[in-house]
Length: 302
Image 1 (tube, rainbow, N blue to C red):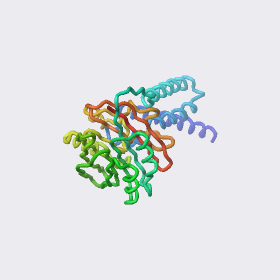
Image 2 (tube, rainbow, N blue to C red):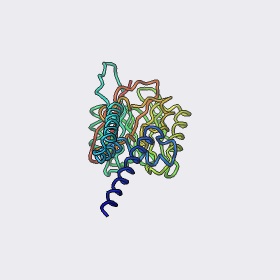
Image 3 (cartoon, helix red, strand yellow):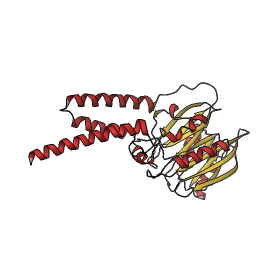
Image 4 (cartoon, rainbow, N blue to C red):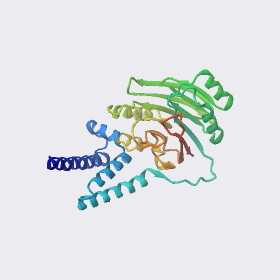
């Protein structure tokens, strides 16, 4: 009986080791190219793989050769994580910059207008975009009174937009349980701006290729200037490769850990802001509030 138990523990440890190596292979090589593996890819972001790897490493403490190999892997993974998922404070020059505020407010009622107006007073963003927003008429009145220079509009798909200028036209597109987005034409400082606010299905068992390809194709066809939203897809996804050809992501300009969900200990970057390559990103700050499990994003560009 004792021998059987020892053998079972050995088998269990080997299974965990194989699983850890498979997760590494999926995360760095396969990513979400194939639907079968994409489920594991979405469910196991790098911070969780690192924690799992630490557990596996401790289990092999007595097997020195394997233990040291796992230590090297963990060190490499941690170095990669800090180099690719952390940003440092950027120096801002005296050239005037514009800014964008984006936040998934998690369907809070009433809308956290006090937090939103505080950020507007502090940063004066030209574009404010909220998803999972259920503003009442009273919420809209509060925003309009506190920020008279802005035009606010409740959108289909539980979204809200605020423009420091005027909203000229809004077009809503959706496919049930797949994606929804609003395409907005606005005038800011006398210039036409095209903005897309997107919200992609959060279910990890759903193939993200279709909605992201459709959103990218639409943004290209209509020459969208700013593309932002809760994509429920990590920044590292292969389906964002097309975006990188036409837009700058604020990922490299993000201050601190780039992950946006779930607060207070985010492990995955699903809330993102992309801007046309005729603009220059400067930096992106993030803020945590108990009202939402998503970080608020404040992106500066020129």
